[in-house]
Image (cartoon, rainbow, N blue to C red; front, side, top):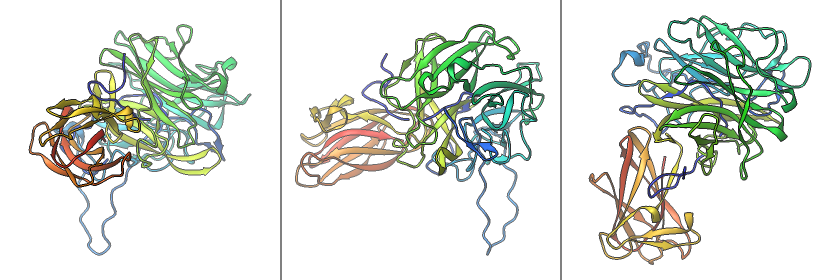
Length: 503
């Protein structure tokens, strides 16, 4: 199976993920602005690999012009279309500081986010009326206390599971440091409220493979028949891998032996961690992070399987990465899929500030998540489509260009009207940036016109480039949710199209 972009396309992306409740899809009738494995302790707390949730504030009113208090933010449950928070962007944090390894659940119209321990809480909790915010941190601590086997300051990657229909018990899976050795293990806690406080079960960790260096990054998966599973990452660097274990019906104990389902592959940085598993397009889609959580090379990847136990086939390249975001989000990883009534969202963290060594401050991000079958597409993250693999009409032809992306390009270089029709996928409807990588070696000016789904086109100028060099032009275009056709038609002059990138 080719997990790259389908049809005449290929995709790339990048970061570190944790499993948890899926994120709801960002329906965009209103889209306002463009959009860890081995963790080191901080005095009194650990800024390490755990899931976290967002908090976003509103703009301060002007000091010169007093304004009346803002009306309450409407709940998505009370509106026909999902609410988009003012100022929201998929490349800006919805919770700015100390909310790493986030996970989100929805309860009675309110969204709850949970994160890795912060300077003031073993498990910070935030709430919002919408996945996009505005998020508000709750006072106090979501975890009542640590279990007797755990030491303070190392509580990472929470995973909260709502009750089954008719039930009242919320489950919390978390990783914490053993107080008798330098090792993380996974514990479980319960609460009758999504806000907590969660009370841990004593008597020893739920998962603690001492021969593999311990375990972190718990992620829950519940099959259609109700069978519960837990995914986690073994923590020794040389043996780091993602495991799957079946749980008892109450989710409090293992019900079978663990199985290794994914390890680090060639070309992946350092290690794999932070799993999150969903079923989409008739397949199991396993998100995971690769690399050091404190480094900008940290990235998010995914793999697909027909069986929950695998084998999992990895997609080519990262889904989320610092480079893919053009540096606007650094080290994106520890993802959590939030399934909402309007669709899916991807919740993840990014590095906000380096604090020295392996200590970092990470914030929470939220982006709409769309699906081309089992292939995820994230709002704000780029997807590249090679022009030579597009539909070439009339006199446009594929060209071999070793220095171009994918080793080829397409040339609407004959007469006027030569065109390249590129099929592109949008996770939700809205305005997108379309970057056209091209070369114009004709010695004069060149122009294209770009049309979306046959609508009225707009011209794009292609400036002259030196022989053998490539450059780009970026335009803003409105896309429908799902597949769209970008028609690139020559108006005058020469020109070759390397690829189109949509974000």
